[in-house]
Image 1 (cartoon, helix red, strand yellow):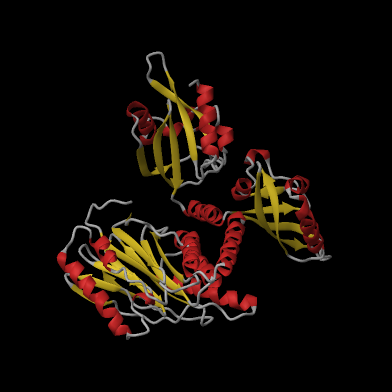
Image 2 (cartoon, rainbow, N blue to C red):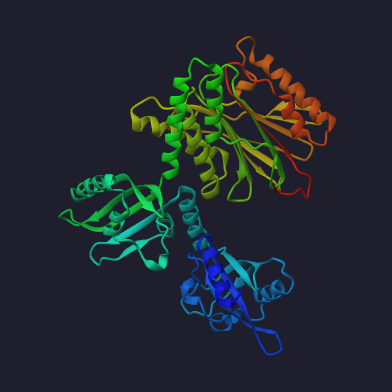
Length: 520
């Protein structure tokens, strides 16, 4: 592949990648030795410490703009990767920019990967400014949104990377004008935009949803805008958020479709049960095999109610948090039907976003989830949804589990053939109180232990007490942990297979991996 063709393909790849990435082509002397590198492609988010964009670097040489890199560890990593085709990581390392206005003290980690005849170099900054920017970028990606500003006095319009991504537009082409957006809007939605603009002129905040056609596809766009106004109420500076809600609208249509099908087939229990399972899979996909997280192996089982004709609100979460710890959770929204399923999906997705961008502390996470449910009832004027939940944070280095609960049964820990309920900190149901306090408890969690989170459908039955329902679960844990089987999680969940006739059940099992255990 010719150098120009290679650069074109590399640029197409990098245009779709978040983060800072550059593609470099080696420059060799007469003897074939690498003497420099040329910037051939760069991702849209690439901006160096001197404020130079990726597009401005293209065609330039490394020695020309980054002389301090020459013959250093990053330079050596590029050369070695080109030689043997193996990826490498350099850092964290200090970097001093030659530019006078660049930050004085910056620490970088650089990833180097082979890419055709050249290399792909990616880097992350570890200073506070970079972390804040990465949090904003991560929030934009998780929420599929972006922000924009319009200086009415100067006419300057600024878009974040998220808006360019939504409108599938290169940042180098600049923001779209209002006329351009109108041209993309479906004709039947133009009155919605005109009405919103009139409301904005009267000093109101705009919150509208309209559809645009991009590349043969229709997207649902939500736009929220407000302004800083002068003494006469005229806008001086406009701030806005754009969000791609296509998936939300699609899921809402699918939920409505499934509920309609449930209504039409209400006389057929088998048909209704199949549809209930389909809806559950839309909002809560269950992994079919155990998953490996840092220092931990996790398996999940979902048991739909035998006689239930509506969808339940049981859910789980198991993922790596932004700080490298592992967050585990199970919960149960009160009630059944689409409302419970919607609340369940909302809790699960918000928890996932919070653990990546904000915090991994269980009590803080429950406080955020409580505020979400309680505020939902306040805004709608209806009774707030309530839910129980347990959230735990596992530190794989310290082998310590910290957990909090909101009106939920405590997890069970099995060690050497003995199973105990973990000490239960205080915490009311989610959505019940405006400002509740959630306590935390901690315990060791080491290789050989088994941990079981569950919703109440596992132990609550109409014909027996809670203690009677819990006894066979504890006996199963005792037996499994004592026998030291090679696949304890699979064996454990295989034995917890009896569905509750009247309530859904979600079960999450976890065990620490021995030192050196891999990640899935």
